[in-house]
Length: 458
Image (cartoon, rainbow, N blue to C red; front, side, top):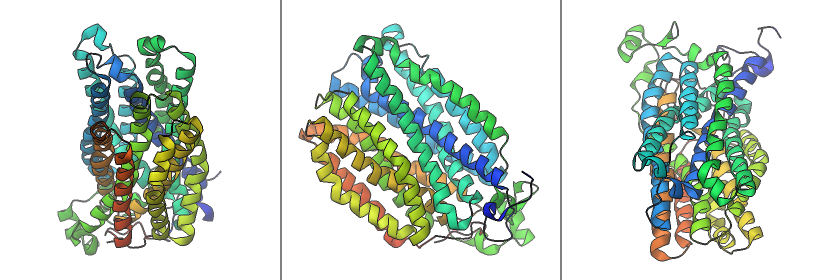
């Protein structure tokens, strides 16, 4: 293929630096693969935290306290993600998306591999969980800008009329990573004994991630910069001008003088529902069913696998629907549906029946997590102006992650232990989704927005 740009690969609106279909394909695969790796790494960790880390790293406490401690180490990664969002987000807005995406994939891959080589509490005592937290922090620092960068890159590459569908590949990457991690754990639980799993089996998924990191790093070295970044009026020779320099050059004053805030808080609200629901469905429920309800651990793990497989249809269909009817109607439908099914789904999940548990988790995962993520990927990118899109998007995602995903499982563990019941989980699903519904009603419709504009949509 030549370097001439085809109409099908043209990033709208006219005037933006264009890329070939091959460039768009590379960007799509890179975004999908990096996000898949991020979520595989985090899902590997979350499942390990729910299944074995309370025994491997916190053996001297009760099962309930051990689960809370394991979930807390899961949560600290989100604090590091916030620092990574600030640091790499600013770098991405000033120096370009490509440089950041190369660094973040490297950080995530190295830290995840090293987790698989950690000595246990039985070997070195308290130093073991300390090292675990340190690597979790490093992993989170890199991941803090990974999904934001992939989201921005794909949205800025995609043709406006297909932006929802193409941007949903980021969500599909999260689904792929979740599926890979859950599948690996399902195999381990099926073929290894409890003793083998605790002694050495839990290390296998973390060590295997090294091969995926090598491929992802190679792919990103050959990726071209976002065409929107290169076309920005405030970018000169590949570097964004400072505010003072841009003002002196007369660069789009509307974008430079606009007060920030409204778009960010709207995006934060959109993020809250998906992030909170994800922490409950994909992380907490696995440990809750296994340690509190004494359900065979393979049942919820298999349910996530089946739900993720269905997600390969759910995610692009939601993205396509958003392109056809708009972002707001789809968001409204998904949030209301999640609120309506929260209590019935939890009745199924806590019934003790393997079939009912699987059905309930599949419903909750596809409506309340993957469906919302598909819309989030494109809508949050469209809400922000080009000058600060990377930073604001990354911060909205990570602050939402800290408030909902990191704290949620710990809060759910505490509330279910206090009440002795499952209803707090369903109530949290309703509250998280209601926050996103309110944000959707307050947000403007962003479908087809010109992403080269420096100002926010709200």
